[in-house]
Image (cartoon, rainbow, N blue to C red; front, side, top):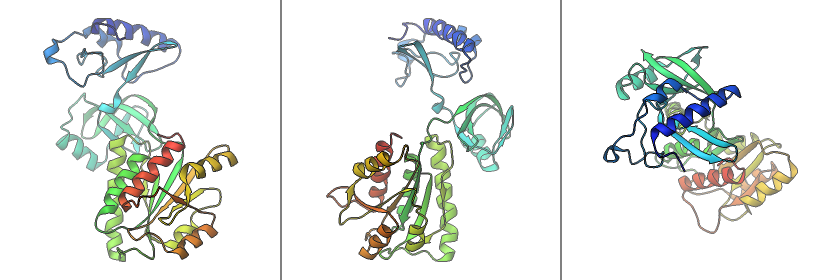
Length: 325
């Protein structure tokens, strides 16, 4: 059970921070001097979403919500840094970071960030930096840690083009669920066929959606949306060392059998390629072409799923089976 008072929480945290510092463990923005300012607020003013056993610490308590959990090796502190705005930047130096023009506008005009506000800036290489905003898109770095939300497998989604704007939804959800790449594909039964002019507009839009989704869900990398490929070229991209799976409405192996059998052959599954059809599914000739490349037909059950449901379901199950949930 957590301590009964934020003052007790503050004392517990101070002791834990001192112990952790001696062991070389660092927590983002762990300013012990601010712990002395912790006060208990009246219950009527407490935030219903607090995580401290019915008590809401004031902003002085590490400027973040602190969760104390009893573990085998004593008290463990969890900093809920997901509450802070998140950005990506390639302009990160030893003690400072700089946002892009677009993200600077979002930070100042939309989020109304002020000097001293906290934010997370990721370098796109699985490193998160806890920062303090100064001005004009510039931030000072407080601490850093490896990104926690990036899956250990590289999942590539080959998505046959659906009708209307369903691809927007598919890209967004694929990124949220852990896909590393999304490749639009034109198959025999695709109703939607992009001209070169349309693709030139759509692909930047899909990459923008992927970028925003990566920020929202805490990814350590920015997944990419590639050029539109024909089915044959898409199949050729699936290498023999990858786990290639094509979902076929007329039947195939269960996902847990495919992943399980692969796991027994390899010490670790590192790359998985998923091929999902459009509203009309795949032609039998396309399935045979995929099988010739070592891609395994799979089924997601007896019910026929919509194209945008199928991609969400497939990625979710794969992430669960590979323990990347």
